[in-house]
Image (cartoon, rainbow, N blue to C red; front, side, top):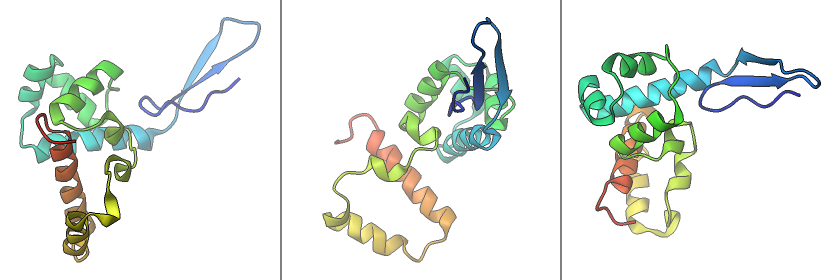
Length: 144
């Protein structure tokens, strides 16, 4: 019985009835690289070093580097620690839709002004604005 790939690890587990054999195959390499890229991008956006991340999370600096290059999988506790440090929801790093993070939307005048302001921006600039908005939304002491 094949299970769908796990979003964070990209592994598909196959169980064969009547045996204790478990087979894993690597799938979702793009998902894993997307996770690595989002983690690296958020760290550089916050202008913190891999050593700072290591000191704050207890993850070895070399492991942070490997995770950001996609050479090592991040486990759930590490991902939670990184998300907390980066003040972002875990789902953001797993490729969730950032729109789900915002309440109020179209009727809020500030959201409408942001929409008008960002409409002429390139995709990269829009992603930076979105990343900053998510950071502010999840910052301790922020209103929510």
